[in-house]
Length: 102
Image (cartoon, one colour):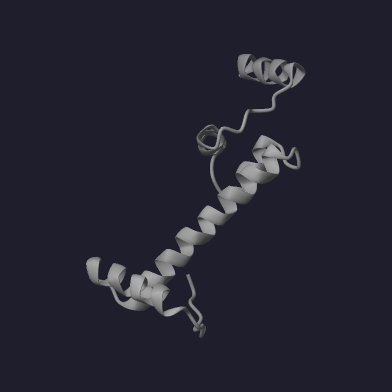
């Protein structure tokens, strides 16, 4: 993946935490911050997908796509956050027919 240089200002506490993590993993500070940013973005996308699914704005498949995870992983996230699955009976019948036909 091509990298670009950016400049940002961080609170001292966050920078200290990133430096601690880098030292524990024997990495440089930039690598640690990139890893933490990637984790934060993934977590944000998952939370947004769960929220939009819970509000009925997205289907299960679209929410999984938004989060960048499999449908099964999204179902696990929904279970963890105690969000019930929305599934109508007609849709379930269609999917069972499709599975039986294959």
